[in-house]
Image 1 (cartoon, rainbow, N blue to C red):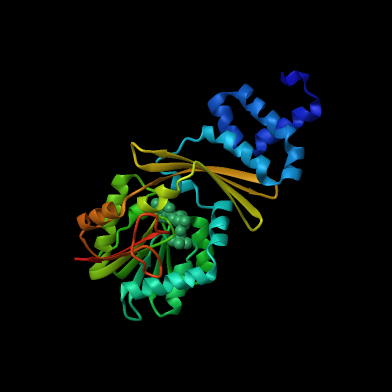
Image 2: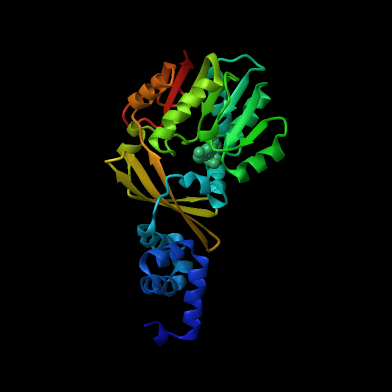
Length: 311
Ligand SMILES: C[S@@+](CC[C@H](N)C(=O)[O-])C[C@H]1O[C@@H](n2cnc3c(N)ncnc32)[C@H](O)[C@@H]1O
């Protein structure tokens, strides 16, 4: 079929194959013929893209979603480029300030206390908390984020590593884990991570966790979602595995005609499961909230905050 196409179209198809990571995955999974059929559709619709904006690209991304294979350690190779830029755009400075106030209040530490922010991302909470007089350590797997953070705040201790490798013992007065970063790892690794956090804290040290619990995520679960954030378009195709209680997502980021797709997975825990896991790791639960204004946590809450103390 390809031979009947013009050489211009063939070049266009080949260029699209080279440029599209999703297409490369499709070639591996479905073979070249099926991929060409997919890309022919892509090329035929490029004109429509200029008229319909991102809508077509999203339709293409959706087709590619069936190629997703989520690795157990997907997070090792996810947080760079457009994924990080999108997260940064979604977190306005006022939200970071309010969250830092909340963290400081709930940790209840004196100025000068040593705090760990894990994973810290671009270090937005570390910078705010350092300005309030805390001695901050930011820990994250994303080299891009940590390099950027080092440039902005050399006074903070930055560690670029996998949370699964946290080895500190009784070093910190308080710990926070914010930004929907709970549940990325396999369940056994999350259990070990909570035990490592407990070891890293001094006795009576507190842990503040912000997480998208089952009561938050499942009532608003959608198989397909897309958003425009500034100059970027972001699409998700979600599949809920009831057997494993996790959401597998194909994320698509589009800007200036450039598209990146990456798979991810997040395990979903109810509020009570989080509390049981924390108790098993040596914590006592102090409070739970359903918002930063400290509304009671309920089915359909916007987020779950859990505050716990090391026994
Ligand atoms: C959505 S961002 C949130 C970052 C930050 N807490 C915030 O609120 O801006 C999730 C972060 O988790 C980090 N991350 C994911 N898995 C990790 C792991 N196994 N070890 C360390 N960092 C990890 C990513 O690199 C990314 O920076």
